Image 1: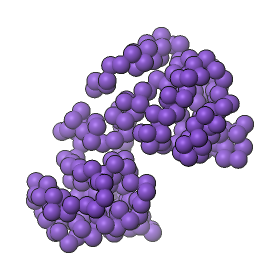
Image 2 (image 1 turned 90 degrees about the horizontal axis):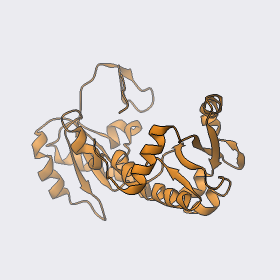
Image 3 (image 1 turned 135 degrees about the vertical axis):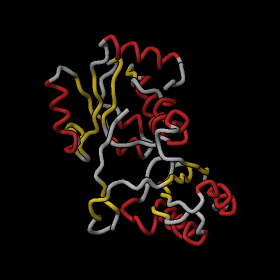
Image 4 (image 1 turned 60 degrees about the vertical axis):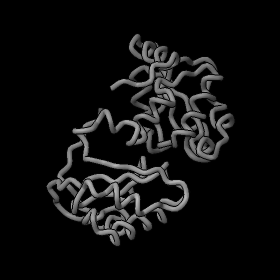
Length: 236
């Protein structure tokens, strides 16, 4: 899987491979900037026990665009580092990356690498054949449903799920995620409109339609009725 070969990528990769990367950045606890986010407390302790140095920053301030204030407690010139924390949009990650660079901290994942792995349309060509068949549409303003219906013809009457470039509304399974038949235009439009309503301003770039894979279902979520599968995950 080839990522964009720009200078800071090469430097970061070599630092990681040589063992020079020894700092992990964690999110601080909301309203307690000197404490690690409680959800990452165990990992924070494990990192220290393994000999890594750690630093904290304010994830909320990054999401609000105040990156300089968010990273004010990170020491200068710490070199190559890894971020372990909550999801960021590609644009906010890029802002964080650039602000850290100015303090002498080099994230091992460049903005281009982050976007490549974060947005399905970016990485689909590397995964094609190993991931469910998918099509996508950038969304800026009203959805052109005639174009959507035309592109979905490749799925015939197969079931689909809809998501944006990053996340789904799987806990609103029947109303905003699962489409029983790709050629049922009324169903497609109903589910897509509800999905967009729920995503609101958090919509990531556009719409992705993926062929539904019938895994071995072992139950239903008690509230959302989302199918619960006998599922194994691998991380690449």
